[in-house]
Amino acid sequence: MKKLILNIGLILASTTSYAATEYTQTDSYTIQADRDYLADIPAQNSNGSVNAIIEIPTGSNQKWEVSKQDSSTLHWEFKNGQPRIVKYQAVAHYQKINHHK
View 1: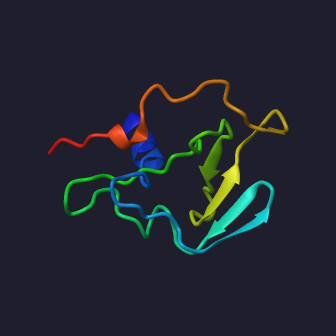
View 2: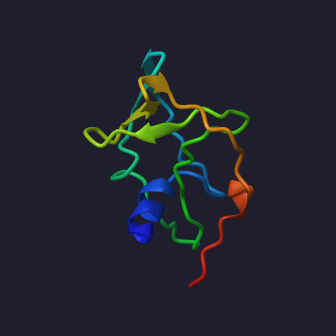
């Protein structure tokens, strides 16, 4: 289970940026991208760096997630009927994600 969460949760942040170049914010809680975050972006690049989806944007405490129905869509996660706000910050800087061969 931990490996599955890591694979799903770590796809977009790396030394090489694969951020969607075209996207539309369809409402306050939904962003539609021009590519599929899980299918169109490799988990590992040819140089060994990894890509990761960071679901809590830098400088924010909003918790976003890739849609399980359409992985080109990001939704602001809801908890108890409200947009989810995390009460903590990451303990590590995401640019420090290491991959060992």
